[in-house]
Structure formats: C-alpha cells, structure tokens
Length: 217
Length: 217
DNA sequence: TGTACATCAGTGAACGCGCGTTCACTGATGTAC
DNA sequence: TGTACATCAGTGAACGCGCGTTCACTGATGTAC
Image 1 (cartoon, rainbow over the protein chains, first blue to last red):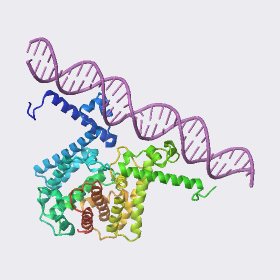
Image 2: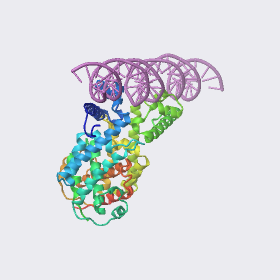
Image 3: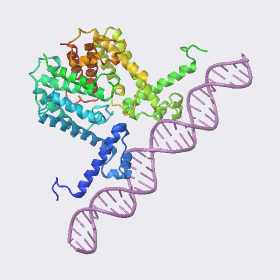
C-alpha cells in the first residue's frame, strides 16, 4: 500500500499526459474560444486516437471543469503569492492584470460570459473565495473605515461570503468595489473594446486604481 | 419603381419572417448561449425545413452579426431615449442596467467573452460610439472639470474616439470610468458571481453609482 | 378580366464533416510468487 | 531471476447525432400585357 503522496511510474506518466492534454486544451481555447474545444482535436494534436483521452478524462465536461478549476487555482496562487510578498491592493491589482493579459481567454473562462445552466462544483467556488479573502486582507490594511452608507449598513447583515475573514462594512465594500472595478477595466480591455479609441489601457487602469485607492469619506 | 420606403406585401412578409427567425435565435441564445445557436434548430421551431432559412440569411455568421447589430442598436436607442427624456448619468446607468437585466445573454453577446478572430463590421462599431457619445454628453452636464492627472493629460492627445463630441479630458475620463464601472458591476452580477454572497446587487450598483457621481478633485 | 410569364418561398435529398462516446481487442508494463 | 498473471494505455471500428450548406425542383404569388 503506497503512501498517498508517493507516485508510481504509472501515476507519474498519467499525470504528465493529463497535463499535456490540458496544455493543448488551453491552446485551443486561446485560438478559438472555449466553445470550440474538442477532445478529438486534442487527441489528434497529441498523435493519439480520440478514445484514448477517455483514460484521462471521463468526458469533455470534466475536462472543462478541470480547466476552470486550474484557472481559479492559478489566479488564487498568484494573488496569494503577491500578498505574501507584501503587496498592497495596488500590487494585487497589477498581479491580476498581468495574470489576465498573459492569457485573456483563461480570464474569460472564469469571468466571461456564463454558460446558462452550468454551475461550478463547490471546491471551485471555494477557490474563488480565497481570492476574495486576499482582497479583504489587503483592503483592511489600507486605511481607516469610511463613513456609513446605505450599502455598508446593508452589508452588516449580508456578509455570508466573508467566511473567516471578518471585516468592517467599509472594508467589505472596498473589496467589492476593487473587484468590480478591476474586472470592469480589464474585461473591456481584453475584449478589445478600447482598441481604436487611441488611449493606453494601462494608463486608464492605473487611473482607475488611483481613484479607487484615494479613499475619502 | 417603388419608393425605397414603400413595402410590397412580399417585402413585408420577408421582414416578418426575418424578425421571427431572430426572435427564436434570441430564445436559443438565452437558453444555451450564443455558441449553441443553430439555424436548423430555429427552422424546426418555426416548422420549416433548414434550407428555407437561407432565403433570409446568407449564413449563420450573418445572422449572428445581425443579432449583434440589433443588440447594439437596441441599447443605443434605449440610452438615447433616456437622454432625450432628460436623464442624467445616474438615469443612464439605470437604463443600461434594466436593459441588461432584461436579457443577460444579449448583454453578453456585446460585452461578454470575445470570439478570437471575430471583428464586428464597421457600422456596428459606429452604433457603439453612439452610446459613448450619449455618455459624453451626460457627463459634460454633470460638474465642472476636475484637476489634471497623468491619464487626463494622456487623453488630450489620444481622443480618436470622441468624434464630433469634443469634451475636456476630465469629461472623457468620467465617461470612460462610468462605462467601465457600470460594466464591471453589471457583468459580475449577470454572470452570477454575486449569488451566494448574500448582499443585494441593486444596492451595490447604487453604491458604485453614488461614488462615481460624487466628483471630487 | 384573363392569360402568359417571371419571381420567389419552401421542400427534400444529399454532401461532408466533426463531434462525444462506447466497445472489444492488442500489446506493453508492472506485480507476485 | 524467471515465470504467470493482472493491470492498464492505446487502437480501430462503429454508433448516432446534428451541424452548415448546396442543389434541383415544386408550387404559390405577383406582374405585364
């Protein structure tokens, strides 16, 4: 009975093939979007027959779910690593932007158009809340609490999502604002809605960030 | 030779069938996303054979482009109607939100995950800039110009997009911020990223709007 | 008003394609004695 | 170290499906005289 962590050669091989399948999947997604992802096409790229992939993934849906999980995991790791390095909210914002620019379709797999009826498994939403937790921590270190507002009062009684990261309403509000503003600029930029407008998206991103961090009230 | 605007019965019929095709297309998109849209399925829903639709649309791509055009047109009309009714930026924000909530997948067809390689025809980008123009006008009426910032200085020399709506840099900046923040909250809400967090998205939207409109500096 | 012709909507068959997935089988790799 | 057996990766054929699109044709609707 092998220890859970130890890997037999066969397990190693399996893990490597699985990883290779995912790499080709990401390439396909980058090239034509997630809806164009095809198991048979991946198999062909790897020089295997189509059915061979079913040794590694039970179905196309399982592969996609796994990709979504990996994407969340990758972003959460990047954010946590930055936070561990002492990054403040501005630092996290740039970490997220770099992560998104590195592979826009990976970003959109998480934050883009939802597929009606699809619900991510629970462990995935768990990873998503890791990201929020990092934002909350960085937001708490930023500045003293702001004044009460209707929304902050509302948040007092509606903070199901904060888990083991309690924070005053102004900090919760700040984290939500940060998230939605970063996402707003980023997703417009990545979707190409700024192309042809002439200005530099990086400067706009920086300006949004400046405004966001100049806390008042 | 009939006047361009006059419609023969056949033209009327054609227009009606085209409209009906589009209606079914929107239903399919709402139910399963744009990538699942199928001409054959639409034909079946209408009780026709598949090839019949080729009398009305040259291809699947042409239909989708037409849907994108209609979506932009619909949003631009809604925004312009609100502006004509005297709505300020806050009013426009709510108009946009209502429009998006009425059909989330229609919103995402415009502002969601881009399909790599797809480029909207020129007239569509023209409609998109109508929307920006309305935001610029409403933003100009809001408050005096703010102070200079690096991004506003940058905008002085990079305002290709403003067309015949000249405005001081602070107003351009305000319109961009408005757009990206409204989109940020809306797209997270519509994609379901707030579900399970407990708070009311409408209140968060209102809070973002309040912050956005409390101009300072 | 009636007839001859042109226009055009819609059909059914067909083409070629790629998809996800199942299944019986071969051959190589690892395990137990 | 060698043999017998179990495990497992990968293949090729096949199923059923739906897709976009083309084409030759029928039948109805509109137009011209």
